[in-house]
Image (cartoon, rainbow, N blue to C red; front, side, top):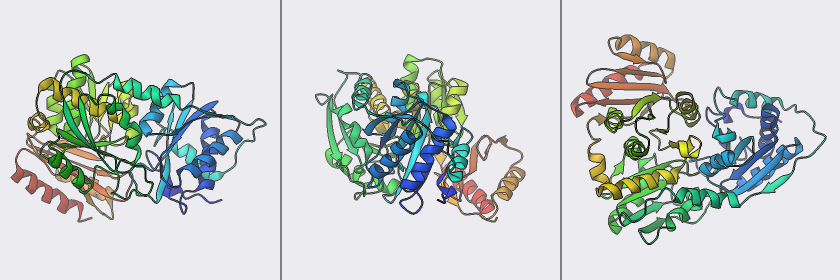
Length: 448
């Protein structure tokens, strides 16, 4: 069988079902994972997409045919799989999901024990090559399938232990987008005496009829914003498709930039872990870096992409990391995402300070940010060369694409890992300077 190599991304495997990814594809990938890792036991889970159960069956067959045991935790969020990979006696974890992609997509996210990422530069290329080749070792013995539903309850109990009771009452609106966040809703329901919870789209539906489960797209937050205002809620949250990302809306119905949430969570973490290192992706506002330092933390930039961030956290000893797309990575979950913990830490901070969400984030509005702007270009290499040439008097950082800093503004231009696009993020001390520099840099980018 022929496998479309395009489904292997920098951080995961994703494609349209059944044209690009299907039961045969997943079988080959499952065999390739075993061939590459040589594990004894793998934990798996799946989301609620219409094709996920069938793909799960194919994945189980592949792993068992290769003589390896499978622990199935059933319908699960991606953070649950990361937790399971650290808590269970397994060598790897796999979840069938296409994250925030529309309903016609499906895919897989992979990790080693303790959520060590498998991605670009850490095994994905080898698995791709083995899957496409399709020649696998024969096993004399079949593996066995074990089911473990208890793990999810342990995970939820563990999470609820981070909530600080008795500090105040809060009203929250949660938009599940008919997706996997529903699986974790009972974590906050344990505190119903202090939390008034209002839900949007809290029934599983693999067609995602309400809207795309992607809080990074501001248009998907419209219903949440309206519901927050209607209910006079303290804040609102929106999950993505596999619940490893979350977006926030303040009590005024305004979307909170996701890097601001990184700063707020950092303040909460640094109370218990003073002086520790926190990673922020290099597109984040300079205000985030400043607030972390003011709270007594150390801070470093990191590349974009969950597998790359997890690797850097391990290498540099970071206790927390935040990505501009709403991924929040915690030492408490083996340096992987734990979305409900992000919500709980924001809740704790609101209760401890007595401030509203808009008051907490007001201190972060120190600069003017362009937001991420995409451009289609013919020659991305030429773009990078010209940017470095034109802005040679700035401070160059080549961690991810090109970031160049000046005294009163900075920009980052990087090639997308998921689309054939160049992405620009730019920030300046004044709105006028931001607009001026944004237009200037975009003109250069789009001329190649």
